[in-house]
Image (cartoon, rainbow, N blue to C red; front, side):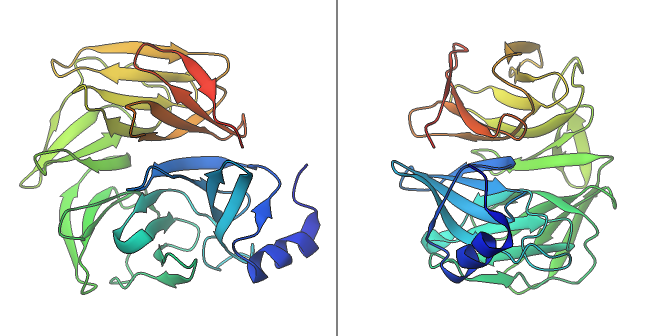
Length: 269
């Protein structure tokens, strides 16, 4: 069943570790160092954890405009059990500690729609901003560094060599010294959401409109890993410790597990 109105929402805020009924609108998924699966639930305004007993609320906002986590979009595991979350609705990044406490990340106050995020080895946070068409780095001091102007960015990652790769509406690009180099030889994306780099050396891109997961090989060729049912609106992506893709599907209200052979199953909630 769904959340039972405001009373249950208030109870969840007062007791962040209480169980939730189900996923409402999962937009991103992440795996921590211990292999636990976490989900950004946009409609619940919450970071939740998937456990054997169901969906556990880690941190939940008030559900009111201009309050923390109102528009939670992307999540990235940080140090000591913490998470960084982007929230374009409040134009902020938030740190969620292991106890579920939420605090705004110090920055220069110039974000418009902070979207995709990634954490570098140094602890700095890379952020793409959809409206300002920019890639920025937020250091632990709060200093913000402008790295590149990028049209319509969606997601960002750091590869094994520390290089920055950004997913845009049209392509994957590698960013170096403020310049971008396209990585995909063709551009079949209809409405891409997220990208991960798999241990097999391929990039995988989720596409909500195409209901697909695309594979982008090291030579730039693009192929379809899976498309159609049970995928409805695949968005956030992660890779678990077994090398499976995890896909947050907002409209299916589910997280799917996909093997590199294209075998799809739903994670239990």
